[in-house]
Image (tube, rainbow, N blue to C red; front, side):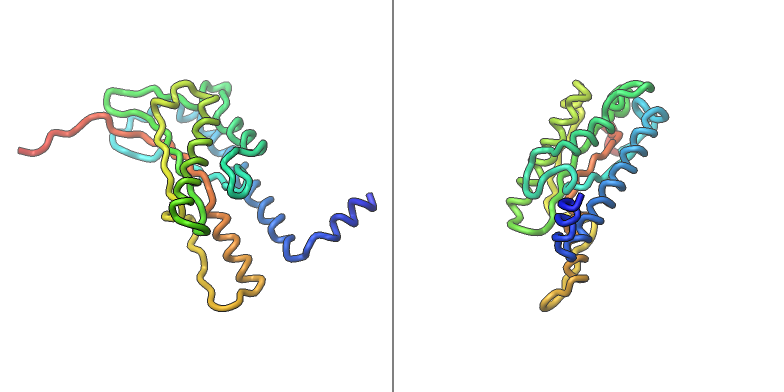
Length: 202
């Protein structure tokens, strides 16, 4: 016990906010997992609504799903996807039943922060989205016919990164780190698409 206390006290004070923030991200992610799971029993199958529309979308923190700068999903990340997409009592979570007018697709968006070269970030975003796709295929053999994979790099940030001038103080550094962490994410969009083409007016 004493050894554990000593290890804890050696942690840098300025690093404590990162632990708290990561715990907060994990709790938020679990909250969205629960919301997604609860909605499956009510919205299984395809919507009868005509037109392109997003049925639901969730953002999963990249810092929880992947190690920094890596593309292999962590153990915790695999647990999250299992809770999201494993079959429930109400039936399979991913049900791609379609109508003559619409079809359901899953769009996986890979986002990064603005650090580093743009082309490297585009590659990282794609590889993380593709890794997510491979993980989800464990729960649906139909997914390959109904998936779209996108890489956004830092082109569509969830939160704008503050631009401070000069040397940054601890609060400013924390604000920048928080924004960049929020932008590193995987977005999973459940979307209903039109399958018919309207006739052009004469």
